[in-house]
Image (cartoon, rainbow, N blue to C red; front, side, top):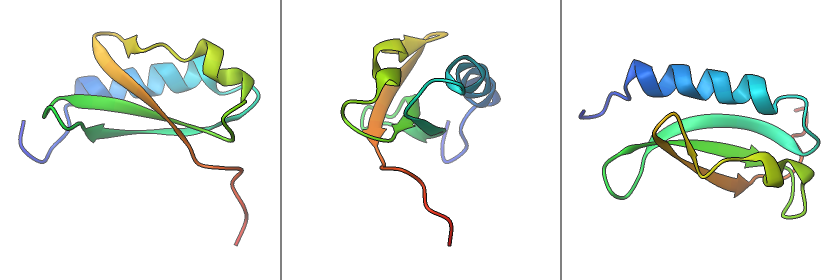
Length: 76
C-alpha cells in the first residue's frame, strides 16, 4: 500500500466514528499504518477510564483498531 492508506480504511474509520461519536470520552479517530505494515484505525479517548473504551472493538470491518489516551481537547 505504500504511504497511502486505503479508501476502505478511511471509510471504515468514518463508520466507526459515527458509532462512537456520542459516547462519553470519545475524542476522535484517525488512521495509520501499524508496525506490521497493515492499516489500522486509532480511536482517541479522553482518559484511561473513559466509558467509550468498553465500546471500541479490537477490529472493525477487518481492520485492526487501537486506542490512545489523548486527553480532553483544548481550544487554542
